[in-house]
Image (cartoon, rainbow, N blue to C red; front, side):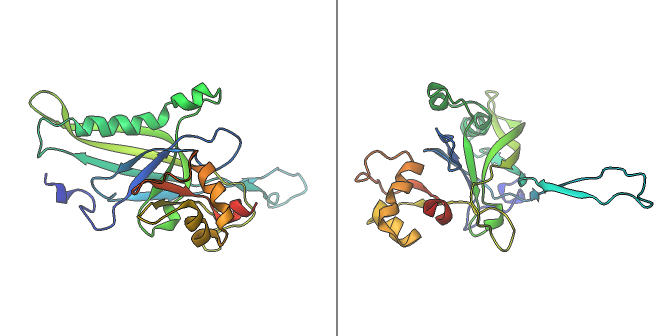
Length: 240
């Protein structure tokens, strides 16, 4: 099987999964970035689901059944497939390491354990302008299938099924197109960026740089290496 025969192939806009520390407090913004998982191939298929809970209480006097009562909406859930292939490098352990990175999304992070608030990482899936699929989530399951092995027995091809469940944000505003709570986005630092300039561009308030620093665990705002990926909290959360 050639690499181009699986998924969308090596397209211009690549999907990735930003893996973050969970927040140390009760906030709904992810903590510091642990790593960025870059997809070798964009997903061939991605499923989004959302459910609403209704309750029906049988009533003797209701001839055709009782009127259902709306109990609330459930957070979004997303399922996607991650295809990994290093068959052009039969001795590489790249696939093994990438599967391990995905499996670690279901394991408590050492930092959260040390702070006595144990939790697995929080993640944000991103794929270009596909904003409907971008929200803060936890990984509820990872199923890995190894399908090809090198001469030393090391896996060189694998398919992983991921299940992500949304972590709703505590904000009053909602996305008018989807009804979903607005999620933050991730910005990659370029030359000339500063926390103050990012805060001004994102929120119209340079003083909001503290919110960006807190969301990313930055102690020294003067040190902002090019290429660093920063979580930019939703504007309504910063105002709140």
